[in-house]
Length: 445
Image (cartoon, rainbow, N blue to C red):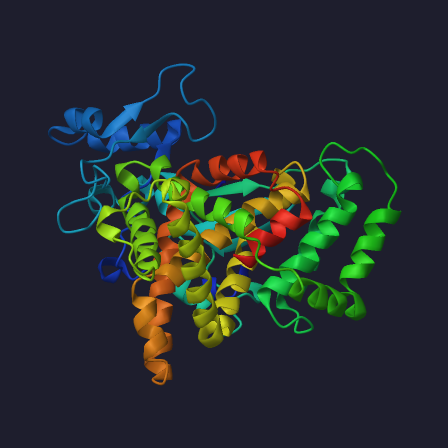
């Protein structure tokens, strides 16, 4: 991450031109539940302001933790703002406003605070702007507005200090094809040739597996032929139709699905008290599925590990999940596809594949994120009610959108702020979830 202080031209996803913070009306404050790291200039700036006020020295010590030499080294790692017992920022006032901003102006804020929920990346000389799904209003603007993923010039002239992530550069084909391959992934996700999100992702993963030996961070080979062949295939309508037909013949395999579900259940134990919302979503989804099992007492259930549930109930759990998933998709599959396609396009701007060793690891990473969100949406306790009132289409869709906004926001906060996804991904790697067959199960879930 770097800083830049200048007027710059920024290419943005269209919804960013329509976004504005809704402040105290937001259902999730952006001043709680985050690790807010600060760099040395930010620390000095805050210190300078506070030291001019009565009690400022004491407030500085109480509210900011400075790192010792060798501790948490790196850019933006001079220290961090301490959190209160309720996990809110120590500078957050009772009225929900920031004491730093109110007393000293926006320029006093650390870069993380002044930039959020904007996510800015730099590739060569090109700045690109997207939004962090940890912000519910960003989720609403991106998932629920037409043409939200179109690329446009950003209307606002960004003059303030920006935190931005430079896209890794290198001399391998893996690096040199970055922009071209990203465009292929976006085009595939937005294509109308394949009707569903899952079919599109299967085609992309199939190509990734095909070119994998020639297209990864360690491969110094300069032979373009295998890569160009893969690119040609993914643009071919007949190939995409074949991928659609092939995907539809692959069943959701019980054992692989149970491993995935188990990892989602266990993911809540990787958090701490900052992750109460995420843990609550996981637990309520598990109990919702278990409620569908005849003769199984949820009150007695231990949901820490699905394989600790008696065999007859773990099998019944999977049947309950499949049944709920089937009912949900009969009614809401198109809506879910819109959510997933826009979410993945957004991720392609923020989590570049070249920050991963190869495409298969990258797809495992982003497909895992998407699978957890789908699992929690379908398992949300209110979904049963929505399925039964599906004749009230407009009201039902509004309620589904509200559930999606909540789950995307809560999940993205834990994705960004904890090592949960990388740990679950590593655990899946131990179960060989780097093959085409296993990644297809991630797509299926």
